[in-house]
Length: 443
Image (cartoon, rainbow, N blue to C red; front, side, top):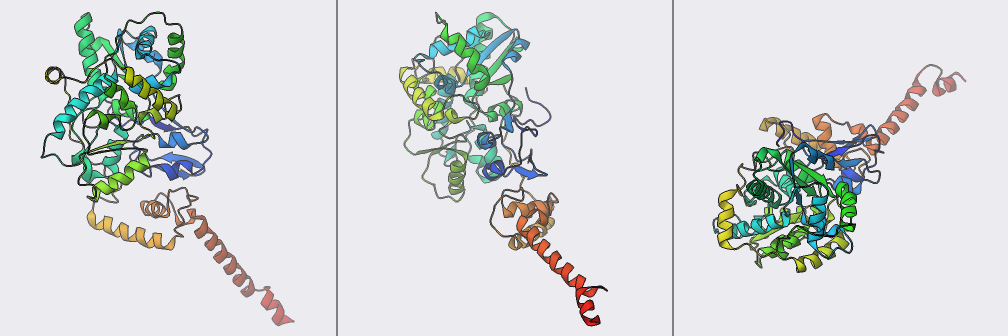
């Protein structure tokens, strides 16, 4: 359900914040400042990538997701497990065990997002056959990367493929199947995604590229891990049939999506700073021979999400082994045509730039402010130490022009000012009656 007011899953717990600068140095959109000893998230710049959650040593950045109890709002409950969930459990060699465990937790139906990924791959293959599409085609599956492009690389928006995410496609298919099988009304069914990251929660509340989400909520893997582990450990029978193909399960790992497309000219990059470097090269037209780009914000792919439990490298290896045993198959063309008629698989709204870096609506004023920023920046030390509470000297200059900071926030400028004031005080003391030089003259 889409909310009118913009929603962010990543939030700050001020009581835990110590005012360190770890987060401001790692934020890919320069959305964090430290002022008065506490971090502050600039909402319009935040893309909910979760990088600040990952690097904060005091756990002051958290992701707000739905509690498991939220499923009780609905008469019928459907679980959408991300394939990353399969890699969280030690000694589980059959995905069906995890799916059956979710039903024991109170879900009436389970539909694999990995199967949704199979359909997405088939739809993207169609897009790759279109010679008129801008190359490289950029994956739309990671919501943090889509938002990153909106904020920092608006010229690449047209490269984003207009195919919805595996989560959204799985949600539509799950609701349709459940209602058809059990005669339920669509509004009685609550569909919940089991998420490894904060960005998915935000994409449910405020989706990009679609009017509203087909998902009612997102439950973090950290929230569901304990209860689900208890159910798995005592499970005696399985009543859920795993349907995703090995390729769909492999989407949890970086490169899994690209591998499912069956093409050679692709690039799969994980870790948001690495993705930024590649997007810069695409923007500069240095990768013109590339057909497809898969960018994932988290290191290692979704298995490295900040809301996971298991070490990402361990989970990645488990996913690899489980994908080899997956029983489903790629989507045949006749099935794809049938699915395309049942659901809305395309993005139904144009993705628009988010001009949060814009200095002013008036181009003349914006140019003046830019000149002022350059002048202030030249006067700063250029060390990008972060002591001022801004990520770099350039962002401090921008903050000063915007009225969010002053030059005295820079410790080096402050030190210069203190020295200058001290010298002026000495000179003044020599001039006032009773000062040192006045005493010398009297002697």
